[in-house]
Image (cartoon, rainbow, N blue to C red; front, side, top):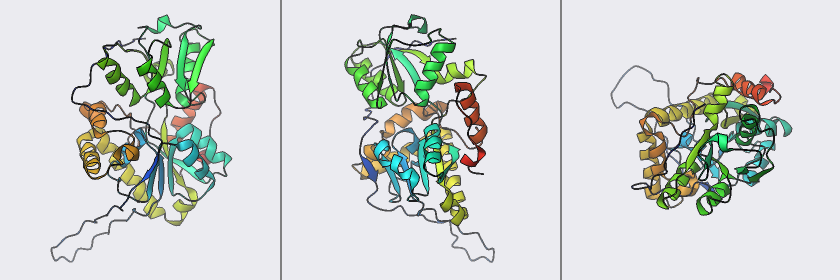
Length: 348
């Protein structure tokens, strides 16, 4: 197993804003959809573009919003930095046509609330990392190490504990603290990095930590890329993160619109991976016109430029077809020791 040691470099041109605001944001003006048209006189009939602007969408801010980089002015899209209080209550209602959430938790919550929503797409894979300013190798980790992570039942925490037991010979930690969200871990790491031996972060907070500590001349070591270590330990198994769920009633009543909506999401993800400059341009344009850009998306456009350019895909976005929703999910569930999900939890 290889462990990369990197020196956190001071942010020069990048002025990265905080990535976990707690507000809920929707646009002040609707987006305009302009279907393709031809001014030439022709007898050839063309299929009109399907208007998806009325699809009601709810997402957390952060990585998943890159799949909607050009939708900032869409009044039917609500993004929130408080998913526990805003997204959680939505699962038992038909108030939205689509919801983005942590995929594994979303599957469980949707089932408990009457299964009104089914998983249609994996938007992103995990971006979880173990870091330290005090240690430079996973071999330094023991059961007595002080660990600070977030979301005890989340995928990142599950993967960390599983790898610790199976790969690092640590069945149980004597002192592991879980914050409610990754933003709290970032604050602790950047303000008092010596308090804990190891911290668990996800992107884009990792990049922010590198920049903040680099400005102080503090070296930040990446102890484990949990995705890579998990894949190595489990035959390439995918670590899931954010998923897109669709409302079954909405899909039944307006299938053509919802299919078009899903296709648009697929196209934006592909663009954000292969041509991230297009996404950066759209985000920059929105930020130049609206003061709520940070609340709306959860990051600055410069962060996308830093993490996505050069084929890095630091957001770990998943193009359509790269992972099979049902097979991928249950492969992870098997590897982590969880129960498999029924096919009815997924869009067929």
